[in-house]
Image (cartoon, rainbow, N blue to C red):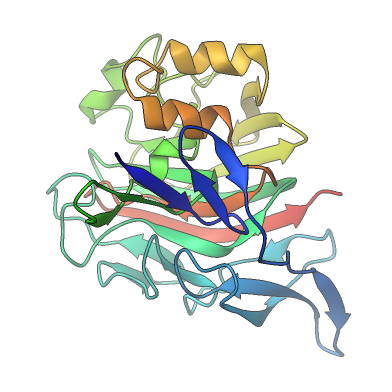
Length: 292
């Protein structure tokens, strides 16, 4: 029998989601300095251990957007299921870059997805992204760190995308995924493999695009280059129908269906993540506004 654990306070999955005591949710406290306004966020420094946290300061602009990437460091970020940043992720001219090798999704020893290690619930995420020719990546949100244990006691981290929706990042003109799926639902800004972005207004490889993900009490909106292109509603019969019609259906992938149908766990919150799909991709100006 496979046992599954994932960090959301302390939650165990064994056929159903059951909350277990422990971890207190960190408060978000704003504090002002003479130079700039900042916010303190509790950063979870260890995978699967919500109690291991440090307080870090992040700049906040006049509109309430928190800069979760400062352009010079990985403060607040770490590898998914890891306590450090994998070596393939670097900072390149003020942007987070994955140095791709074309080897496929998370195939390199020093690769893997990364997360901003603070859980958000209701928020608006804004960012800029660009890809090299033929590149593929994605942005995750409400993600959990999921660990499985098999009958022999062997543990492994399950992939981030079985617990998180994916905002697709893609070179639509040159990557074959653009022509797969259904009705272009694997093109950029789409809810991957479920809802296509309409209009499809991405820019060519090598050019910067703007992205937006708004999550508020179950309503999710994807934006791309100034236009809202996708809207859907979590934890509804319609959401379950979307999952059942996708590669994450209960029949095709029971664990993914279970996690995605109960997205964010009991607290309905989770991590923001960036995907290693083996290709060159850049992200910058990554900001989050917490929505009360």
